Length: 458
Image (cartoon, rainbow, N blue to C red; front, side, top):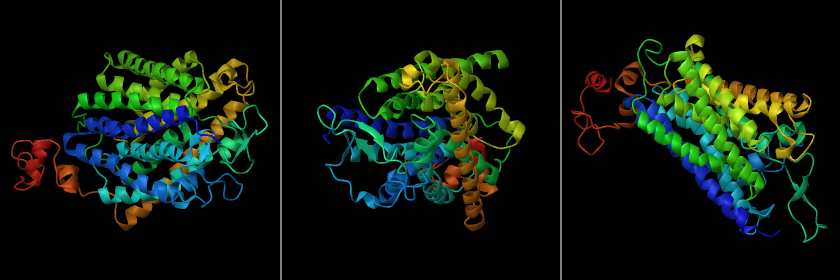
């Protein structure tokens, strides 16, 4: 099949946008932490870029996008280990296979990085690195196959002009959610956000609460940095969602518009909720609401109208704003609200497809939500997909965390946590406070005692 240069150019650019989201996430999370933890937060995101990129080429891509290993829709085969059969001439649906490899690599990277926000201040960096290898291999790669792998394409070679886009896919060669169940997830509400949010909840339950959680103030140390990160995420998300159309076409345009208006509505929904609940809207609320809107529209951006996208974003902003308070009632320490925003937002967006999906967007009268004249079948499929990913991710993550806990240990010591995880794990400080380190070096040569560092960072 011939290469479509327009499609290839758009998806190449989108892959770069999605990669840019991970440094944006690092800034977003880094600004939300205390000053003594910001470097560790940045390092967890950047280490995800390193670890996942290598594993994706070695075996991740084949497990996620290889033809189904047994016809059950659970995992890909090993035919593409090391990308050994992919060449510069390999093309699927007009898109270079190498470009698709790169695009999906960036999804895997940011999904892992999302989890890190829940564990701020207290997880050993070595434990995080081991967790990254195990989680991305055991949890993400199979789930990506379930959701994103359509299987072997079937081309209509008798069509005018020769083979065009795939007319269908060979049964039994793709993931069970997309090819057997038929649930809709345009860009990763299940595989990315519900997956990461459920994993974050399991991990913090095993890891335990931060020292002083619920008692000491743990406010964001740099809200301008949070807003910069939010802006980068918002920008990069156009590649995440519109790029998932895998073509420079009308569907990409729909996803782009839906992403913009849902994000705007999420921002408004959050700060309006804050205004009525707390008396004033906050900067952190605006940033969090925008991310909630981005999360919720991710699975729905190719199946709802722009008005439906506004509804999705608005509901997500309201629900996520309320959900982030549950960690105090539930007693789990989700430091930067990964559960409240990504798990809840992902569930909202995935389930609302069953209510507001429109055939004008999906192109099929069989794919309409309840509010557009469809039955409950689509809503049921969405619920099954969301529940299956949530359960699989939570249980497997819990077991992975327990394994690490009893082998190399998960947490830093109480003294190191009090002094700051940046100095304990990385021997660096984000800011050159008076008396801490040598000017311009970031080293700890001549650094004050841990007790003095606590006073500096408090």
